[in-house]
Length: 144
Picture 1: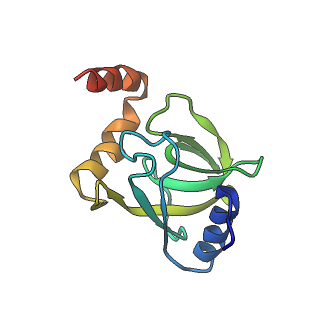
Picture 2: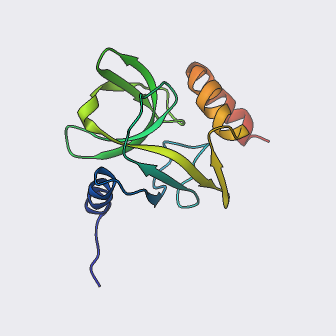
């Protein structure tokens, strides 16, 4: 049995995606909470063949080689700015050539969610626009 670290594994998935395959991966880390939870949820992604928009969840590779799954916060010319759903700091600019996959559906709490579903739309249209209030909302939510 061969063991791969996350970077090796995602680089293999990246090649599959760039060759036209659709792939899935279990979410690792907490940066996309509360929409996507570590080791519970999965994302399905594919090659980008459409115009990207604010709210899209994409895979990109940082200059240091790390792979990141975050949501587009802003597009300015050819530069993209990203933020995780559990973050308030915007990352960017990220060049278009660094972005290699777009999430088209997720498996959240064992249920498939895609564009048009309530939770997809909430995070796509609402959550991305309330960044300054996210930590307060999360504190209130966790205090319940």
